[in-house]
Length: 373
Length: 258
Image 1 (tube, helix red, strand yellow):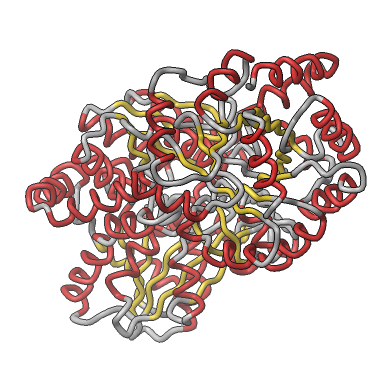
Image 2 (image 1 turned 45 degrees about the horizontal axis):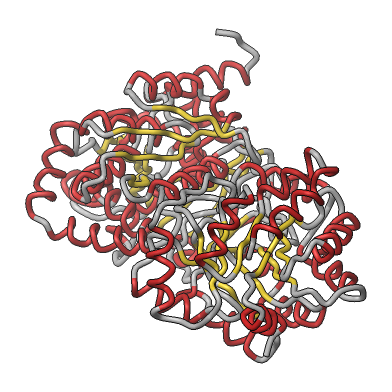
């Protein structure tokens, strides 16, 4: 608890500190490459024959995903707090790569925890992290995936709290993490709002984003919460809800308390956390950032899911039709748009958060299709 | 007065310190757990701490994590642990404290858990992922029963935390000897003495020390500074690797705690 209180105070101080904010903005522009474009997907729109589809190109941010927005913010905060070591968990490897990048940028020591199973699925990102100077530590316990990596990172943080900052990668965990990560990601929605006003002269009708922990969705949605805009969060339906092999917390979970926050959780009747499945490692997680249940239960955001098969076909379609290979996570959001856009008139406007690029998934998809590269 | 309070009161009168051994319930089986609780008593334990297995024991080191995985594989649940305590109560009146993570309790229902565990003869509960800040309901509901709520303090706790945690705790206060997880190496420099005497400025409640106590000389050093010594991972490890040595180990620790 003292560490969380210290972090909360430091974060609010950081937010008010003009020099820190100036540095953050400077790095967003010159290092991350912000603002990322809002791209009108003309051929996809035509193909679906309904609403106009815009893609918020977070895949074009440095390191290839929105994760860098939070990582750069938090490493600056760590430096602001005088902590010279950062640690992080990673599932797909994107947050690990982003944190290792941020640490390299500021010359901080960096250790990344990753489940054994994820290390096998995402060998490329493991090597990227090592190239960036981070130590990658394997987590062979529990289900050997993201949740176990978080447990191990929490254990490290409890042990080394005096000189270490834990760069949690999503809008999850104990306060202030959900607020802080949302704040660093909200740049996505702020830019998208300005950009769609420039392009269309009005706000969009729909926002669509995939939801693992939920940071790219919160980043896009937050700026629009008080506007008349419909929002849809897409969870990982895996092999289908009825099979039990999925990561759809709303469709298949119930309220629980896990890793420092109260939210929807995939758990058994005794309160043990269940294993999850998704074709995309970044959505393969048993719980969801606590603001999402609030947005769902108040009716502000609608949540649905896309299965592995649907996400894979969206992955291929976007690659062929727009020349953009999306991350398998983002492909879940595309999959929902493939269903929804044709039902809407061509006056409607949608923004999809294309949260990451799919280079990291190419080998995995090839393997699923029975090809050896 | 709760059974735990009575125990500490008696020990104080006798100028002794409490020996609080821990095992993971259901590792290797609930029947063995019962035998071990009785062995603990025979070896002079004053209070017994029973771990409840959980899928994600984030405050625990590898030894207890693995014990937890084994117990879960045996189908052990919070419910089964509570009914095993009920069974153990037929044979012994030694105070029993459960150490469990919060989600199994939340899923069980806080009120149901407090009612059932108190009725079964559980004397106290330690929930490492429930800070007193979030435990208002739990503490209030426990007050009408004999169940003690034991919260944790760490070397990093500020005076404000010490005030809050000692106030919320009943039975005893759990001082975590190190910043870290169960089974880590203990650091016996002068800092523990300073920190414990600082806690005593705020409370008269007994203070027991756990996390990292393994060797008899460590137990002895910790006992001199506190009111009780909790030994977990070292016991779990012996029970699993070399059960024949467990009894002599327990006796050596008991001997060291004065």
